[in-house]
Length: 120
Image 1 (cartoon, rainbow, N blue to C red):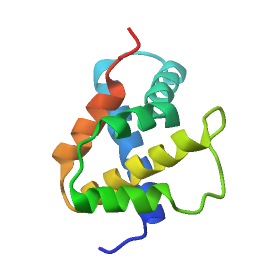
Image 2 (cartoon, rainbow, N blue to C red):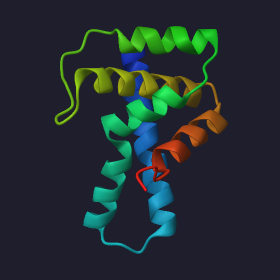
Image 3 (cartoon, one colour):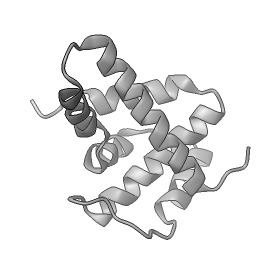
């Protein structure tokens, strides 16, 4: 399972989206439009960058995150800085890696941090 950081980020993005939406669907009776808006507020690059900065990583995880962070970027998330986008990509690569290696406790921790309303 030796995947590129970009492939891991692609997978990690899908895993984050699925987990956030599962949790919202379990707790809510909102309309689809409201659920989508709430999910987007948790899954955005700024929030992912914030959570990435909170993580304590192993040496191997730091190396993977660094490779994902420094990968050539062909796009940029709208409304977010390139620095946020790169840290979000690093977080997504880690989530993809953890998902493939059945480390769902780490994935669940990231999702919990993403969904924590730190804004007051």
